[in-house]
Image (cartoon, rainbow, N blue to C red):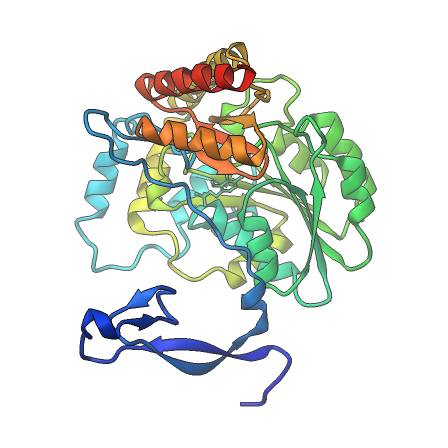
Length: 400
Ligand SMILES: Cc1ncc(COP(=O)(O)O)c(C=O)c1O
């Protein structure tokens, strides 16, 4: 193999078969701690870029506290029971695990296209919106190109940019957590191949308005692809929130990323889709692994889509809980944004965010500390009540 600037010798590990006595444990290259297995270094040719990957830190599971039911409010999952019919569809699909799924997700694509009133050629199914986002970076980015996105936002954006060797151009959000569209425009140059927008934004919860998006699109060269990540759009209640489909009809370079993980409650099955101009959609299909949407995911999504009215009613119930919860935290003295997702964002400094996360963990509730604050997914009442109590004690201790 020819050595290029893309290659780097890094250490990996193998196992010695014997387990050592404690006195002979060694600092381990694989485990990064004292280890009894005697892992040793090997050398392989891997890409330099791997050293630069920001880590993806998944939401923590809740800690176990005697006498308290644990709750995970750290991954923006849907806590409601699945819709009737969805689990039956999954069970039926599970009867034939030996068969590959339909590689084209034919029924799902047809149903989504009919639901959104677009051609089937404009729908690209994938293993979650994550796979669509990954494919979008795969068809646009490479060394020498750049990608522009708001920050803080969905953690996968910089990871995917790193994976493609592109220059990352994060544009800080405005003080109130909204996208800085002037800053985003200023970050675009002739190396820019992709722009990622997130509405409602994860983690701050603020959404993009129709006027903001339309003004922005007018400034973007029409050949540059702009992605509107709408993972949480079903929870939005603000009348100003941009309607992705209406915008998509106006701007051929706008691609929508949507998911069944959040409002539809199918995160564990991994199914989402992109809505894109047929030329872009064809390119996306070229890079997505065949069979990535499992049979169970396809039938569950079909079933859930057929019950969209119920999904939306439930999403609005979650939104009502969200608004009340956000107000309660404000009343307790915390700074909480006007979230349009299934989560709230409490702006806190690093030490306070750490302390708040730990205080919730002591109550067996996992919340998500991120740069600039804590994100709390909307969950069952009992879990939110515990966080309310933590917030009161926490805010009181800060003012004392
Ligand atoms: C903004 C945003 N986009 C996309 C995703 C990916 O969702 P999935 O891959 O589960 O469809 C998430 C998941 O948390 C998200 O927060």
